Amino acid sequence: MDKTDFLYPRSRYQGTVKPENLVFNANLQEFSQRVSYICGLETGGKLSPEESYQAIKLLWKQLKQSKRQLGVGENNA
Image (cartoon, rainbow, N blue to C red):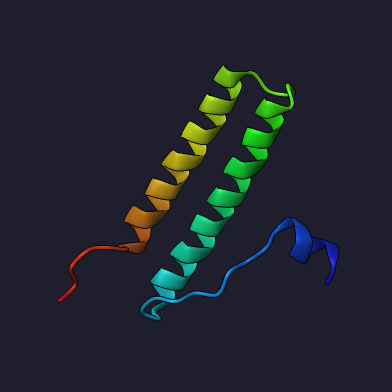
């Protein structure tokens, strides 16, 4: 196991296999990992609660934009 696998673990995708779903799943996992880091920094006193909130809010906006651009969850039938 190399350092990258340890720092940025990836879980196996279990849903309907479509390119947009796979990309969104990767984005969602990255969001989760970054939120975890931010929470750890805030808990450890390296970030203030407000800085943490703003950082997570920005990440959430980026994830929402990704979902919209990929069309995930839209009925394309």
